[in-house]
Image (cartoon, rainbow, N blue to C red; front, side):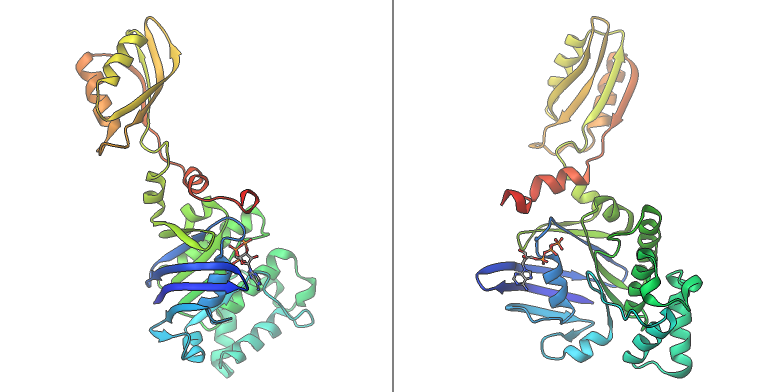
Length: 317
Ligand SMILES: Nc1ncnc2c1ncn2[C@@H]1O[C@H](COP(=O)(O)OP(=O)(O)OP(=O)(O)O)[C@@H](O)[C@H]1O
């Protein structure tokens, strides 16, 4: 539904986006991750036809955004960063106005408004004027305008920015639910958001895509992924370490508690060999030696480790 090929954007000598390529299908929620200034908003603005790229191709719902922007925008909803609202209008008036901009009148207009009031939990403030809304309701009103025409494709620039934890949770669930039958791209700095709502994530750094995969695939790239926590009784630490170090799939053993009659530590996999399941391999070793186990569990990689490992902040630039 969205196809972006080799997108570039320069502002004077500044290269904001440098050869970004990705695609998003119906049923996918793509998380767009990156540090401040990475090029996320610039990419989204080009995909939504807000401004043209310096180079590259954009197709939205099968329509070329560069040659046919009006038609391409019809299937698209966009929540920009710091979305503007009309402060003098009521929520109902504003959404009605947005519906008309999308060509919805009469019954279609009414149904569209009712649908987004319900979806975005705006019923309690429907008659309130926009400038008196709390930040959370303002934000949801902006969100509602982006989906008023029930678009097949949604581009959301930091949709949970400035919301309290409950509101963040609500919006993530909403995105996840809508993602079942739409193609959604949303940008965020919040890694747990990616795990909670995305089927796939792209990490962008200094205008380039530096990682692309499911949250689980990305976590596998974390330095700590698949390490094994192990605690044993009835055996000396030196014996355990010597046996573990014989395994080719073990890179190193970090001892946290040394004893003549016990062992506790973390076993780090050797990334140079393909390890199917280090925890199982260690489990087999423990069983064959009849060591008494107090703890044996596989550690998951953490997305923040991956993120920190492959992106550099603007401050460090
Ligand atoms: N109109 C512009 N003129 C000049 N430089 C710009 C313009 N818009 C963006 N930039 C620069 O392009 C780079 C990418 O900016 P962009 O807003 O796309 O980053 P971002 O990943 O969305 O960051 P954030 O998470 O802080 O919103 C930044 O260095 C920014 O200063």
